[in-house]
Image (cartoon, rainbow over all chains, first blue to last red; front, side, top):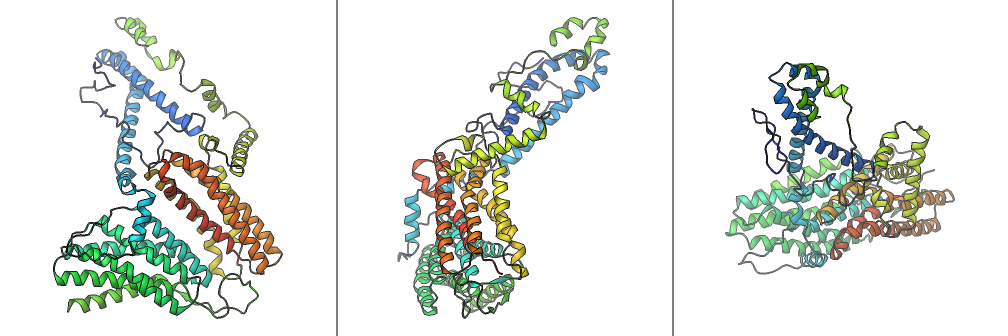
Length: 341
Length: 229
């Protein structure tokens, strides 16, 4: 009665049975409990997993045998006695198996980090070269410039920016009223990277620019390298004029690089102007914002070298998220009205 | 099982033999490829006294601490991973970092949650990163390694607090800076010794950098910890 296929197939019920297509080894999911290669059996989790697997195989073999006898018994009175016994347990086991397979299929589909794997396929040399190139604008604007679609460098740069921001906030004694220092830093940096990328991608879609979302994320991410350098220097060396010079030079260079890459992929004067104006304004203003919002220099205290034996500092509490979004929105509207006219 | 049923099928007299589940005991052995003795252990740990369980777990945790202190390229930390040690270290570190400024209400609350969240989410992100870069280490093993390698930083935190008891001038700052720098490099080196083996050789730097950043942030939080009197 059981089919004579080579693989395990328990589709012997007249109504078709459960789907028995077990996905074998579709690549690693986030939590790789199936991967037995690198763990020996001495950890409790792995023992439980192995035991479960042996039981499963045993049950599948027992199912194949039991369905034989079950269909034989159905015609007789004996089968009804086994509802609480063999038959009930069979059905319960099959329901469990099917549910487990469905859940693991859904998990592999949605939580599969292998979708992101090709974007992390880089060598250290490539990352270093791209970091340096992000500060060098290329003047070729009549032919689309090559933009690398990679996410490792941008992500590491965003995290580095978060770390630098934390350092600046702590040393200047910024007090965050709603939320934590860490939450604000992460929210600001990731919000900028993802939000401005999406916004510029949307504008690029409106202006018919040839750029993909991945390329935009990558371009803006590498553009944060200039920000990291400037902030790292100016959070430790407190000269306002130095900051302005660095803002113009380094911020300007990385903005020019991004702007040139986007211009090379857009046709028409007005679309080019819109895209580049918006991107340049947002990028430069973000650096300005990061410096002034998170690094208030207070008279008398410069860094944590001094202990608590000093006159009380003037602490100014800031509702930073509100200020941030309001400022950015205001600038956006201003730029758009200026460019649109 | 099937043979018994086939023989008793045409005979109604075999009624009592049919309910297989209760009458006929399961025969044979469950042959697990890993030795059956360890499987018996798993089932008999329910009956042992609690003291034995706790002592066994504590011994395992203690052995891993020793491995972190002297990071050789052994695979013991990877094989028998557990998350007790990281939890202990994380809670200790967060508690010690929290008891800082008592007067200002804003700084006190978030400290514990911040440290906790930084450590666990940082570990998760580093693990995801190393998996995406093609590593062969599993998720929980990586969490285990990163958590255990926080131990030098916890030791540095204790030392810093002791130094701060003696005063908070320039000298104490320099001592704290040296201690924190040494322990942070030790942490990075220790975790690299375990994690880097699982990566292809030319990409080790890509995996080491986030680990460096992670321990740097924790070390910097320890260094800037100041106790207001």
